[in-house]
Image (cartoon, rainbow, N blue to C red; front, side, top):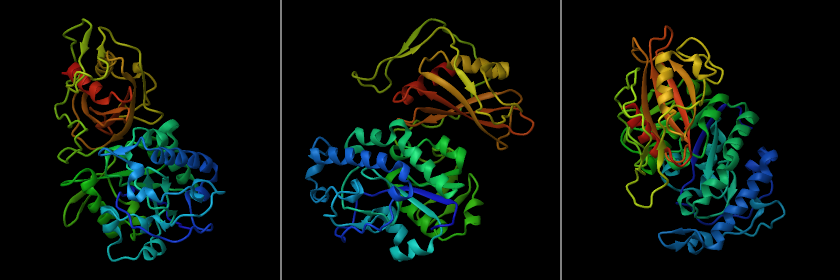
Length: 418
């Protein structure tokens, strides 16, 4: 049993080593560690397996059930304890052979990594959900993009986040490193909830982004995380950098890259233009913003009202740069209250949360509101408030918006604030 309170989360790979041995019932598995969630995990694994084997899923026009890796995929014990062990299995760390795992294993043997590293590692798989590095799995091919239901299978009712939180409670985890690399996988988890239970640090690259970043992340784990002491890992600070041969990596508190770092194509660039604290609404008439996708068959228009709405504004119980907790819009200074009222003219803005305050930033004589960005499917838009707080000058702000319309709402809010 690992004694460390550090957890590393990464994703599986499409490249896999074939072959294996018969299933061993005594082998480790997430089902045994989290028995209260085992039925839910199995149910979702079965649903994903059914989608793979039924044929509607596809990759480049080819049904996924016709891919060679899936031809031998069987209903084994990992899909239900009563199923026969009729397939071949390898530990996940030995099965996966993509860029991350190639760099991670390098000259190290799988057994050496499993035995000598004191830290926890969880791997997200579109088929299996979360698996342990030594959990036995079959050879399969299942990308998150192969079918629109794959993501929802694991995210409905925040199930995947619940599994991670249960694991955190089970092992008293207090530090989490997010090495998911891709927006599509990172957005599967509610990092705000996880950050309330453990200090979360995300990692991004100065040169590479998305899948191309995975090799550097694997090297980071092997050279700077996996065999480091627990104390050393807990001392990592936001904005701290690691200089690797092929890239420079940065640790962040935000689940998106900082300014100057590349982003995946679906993410909006950070807006560097601060919005002044006093905003006059130039056009009070009702306006409609066309779908910004540029296609004729876009989503429904985003409506902009001629009046503000009452929306929930809270700091969720912790202190802010205003030196008090925020329970409603009325708790905000007048200048920031006016900004939130402008944002509320977009009906797709549902709630506003004031996050952690920071000592970084130069501050300002008056409060300013800065839109940062969003990512598709997250349900949130990120922003910052900069002001003249005596203790801290910067406050993270997260607006909950209609899920699936993040980019459209972002552009509407940008226009409103401009």
